[in-house]
Length: 556
Ligand code: NAP
Image (tube, rainbow, N blue to C red; front, side, top):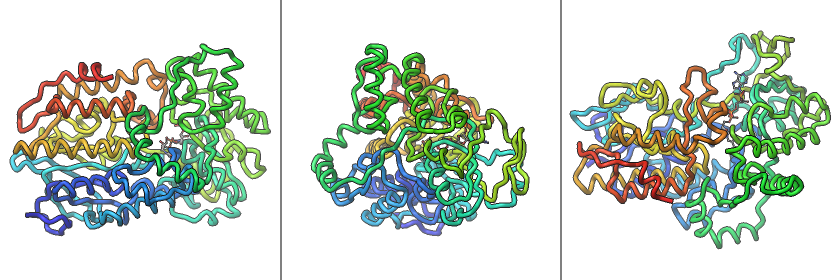
């Protein structure tokens, strides 16, 4: 009988090998080991935390409220942990993850500082043979990726960056103290969520900050606050109902119903409502005020222009304000940002903005970033250029399926999954919160818990029926690709370039990486699939009848 504790032996066969010790990997380890499976987890970093271990840049915090962005699987856990703020900072989230790891004694299931670099399915032995970066191999019946969606930093594709002789630091692998930027000329490249959070704090210490902006984004005030003891008591008193609401919601946070459309009301009424939504902020803020903001360009313009006006009000220099106004995409079609004093920072005398649309970077020298117009000297370059989302972490596992084909070859023309959890030709392989799941557009912790539970249930179903090989059928996968694409068709996401569609990485096929039907509908779909005996899945060679499209239509 194999032991739960990972051993150095490469002859031992684990029931499950798990990749990653972030939110996904930890819950996976907990759920599977309490279900009687032997589990060996491998984590590239030295400790638990995943995203929240690596992204320690100044200002890093979650922009989903912490009372929702936390585990719901254990009632005592959610009663004993107290969040200090509406949007917890990175350090507090990392403390929480460490607390969970200790509380449920999960570290013993993981080997740290060890990266999975390859895995091959052996059809004869019905095993995954997993290659580690220390040269060793491990074998398991199941392989589950909890490697995350935003964990592989995008390649440094800034021209000439290798010439730069000053310090280079990336937000996603931040390894310096903020005070080390004091008195320095700092160049920040990138103005997505990470850049938007980091820039105001860097500007407070640096001698000068030059922000290199390619695409201006919509930044709404985060309106972070301390949580009062009364608020905490009220949340804890009602946590069960709050979690239930999140589980059946659109985005994994309580829905704010918006039955009316932007032009159903007068211009004055729209303005009044946008002002209230702007005060409220968060994902139920301006971008969610009317039902058609993500499907109708003209409706969206009313919200976009509301934010444009806010930027012009805040930023004193009109030329800088115009550069910051997001004109290239509708509000929300690319991930919106929530910041603190972001636009206000551009009123500081030590901050300047360079629009790369007007003057692209041509090269980098030993001490400057050179655009088509001039050289900008810098002592430190901060890269906030984003991630190779979803496929980056999966391709890093170098998975070879039953046919001998690599996953990156199978997905050469675009991602193809079954529920964002399985893929044809990869028997006994699961992805927690993978591409084409609701992960991209949801409170991901809720999506993770649901996916882990569904995976564990399927494994138990197979175990109870004496089966040992589970695989998505090509037909089942085709159905899911159609369903997930249908949820995007007709929305403004379908026509906007962003990491949501893979367009931030050169050569990546342009396919939407999420499912937009909502967390609640997805949960009902997954439950219905389980109830019907897993249509679209082959269990020990027996294919279950599919018709996923019909099931998706039938569930409300
Ligand atoms: P991102 O949203 O992809 O932003 C990357 C930024 O870098 C964009 O402004 C991009 O410009 C720019 N860029 C990329 N390559 C460049 C190049 N070669 N030259 C110049 N500019 C370049 O990445 P991110 O800010 O790390 O955020 C990624 C996701 O992580 C977010 O959307 C969010 O889901 C998550 N996140 C969440 C939080 C939070 O909860 N608060 C914080 C951080 C991150 P273009 O737009 O023109 O490509």
